[in-house]
Length: 442
Image 1 (cartoon, rainbow, N blue to C red):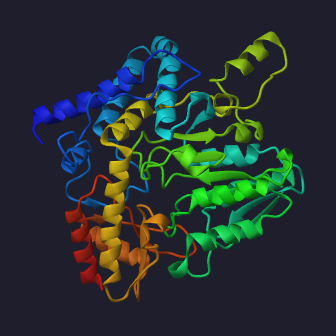
Image 2: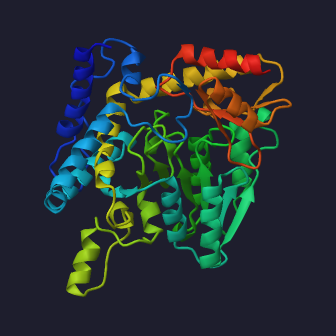
Image 3: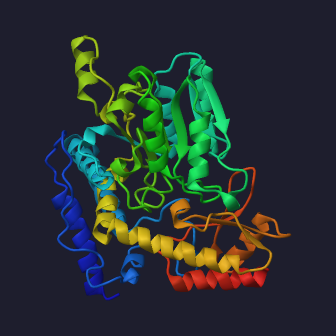
């Protein structure tokens, strides 16, 4: 890509982030970004997207599911903010923090498709968000949270700790017996049948990092709505979703999903600043939780503290956002990460990621000794692709791929699989190269 083209691209992203999202400090309504141009305005030139990353060209990076390499707009924003903070930290922080946090919240609200940025909490990671939500739920001893046997450690451990503190019940249900025959109907039916009169929350993961399975969240949400229709409001079941491996991949809004809490880190598929995350909550969701960590973003609690009066009003995203001093330059640069995705286009990113994952899955299914552990259907999968190689330890397979300059990972579950995560940074040629190396292994 020419220097002129590169300067145009990065300038367009920065302009959309800084100008369209605004520095007005609005707190009630998100202002959707209005980019004047797109990164790929001349067609699907994904090389332009790849050029925004400083990834080593010596490797094929199939690991978007793990931790982000900052794209140029995010890198530049972090460095710009860091320079100003280092030069005059107190004056710059006092002057800029609220405005730039509001910009980040507005960008997040526009991306999620929600009207009120105050319904979004800023966190450090998915894990922090899970802990805040499950520890904060207003549940009585003996009430129940239902989750799945296939969920990740962070969900299971957050629920275990909440149960110890509150005396609540945590129950797991297996979503399927064999992932090769899993279906949206089966998943939904098993969850609905497992809901008991004591169930007050359903703790799920949108895309499972251990298999790549994507849950039919809208179908599940509709089924839960049917259960809630016959219950008193205080007994409603909340749908809580770890969404990190769909966030930045799928073209979906919160209305599309229908959940009560959406919890995600921003430093994976979104390619946002490392150490950032968010929690979005519905009206019903926020009414059902209490914050755990004092917030520096909620004016109501601070005013009550100064005045010596009681804190009033329900929890919201600002009140749930953990306070304290942070790597502010990373939190502020969330604005640029969202702007970049909006300029490329959520639907384009979703289509690109699914195309690459499908290409990878199709190639794997034609290889002897390889067993695919990710559903091939697009409605049941996203960007993560997991598989086993007969007779080969997955760690050995990952090491051999690394020796061929291909970055893969092993699933951190009891069932260990080789895991690849093609993303918008990758190309069909890279997928073909990975498949060639895997053929050589088997």
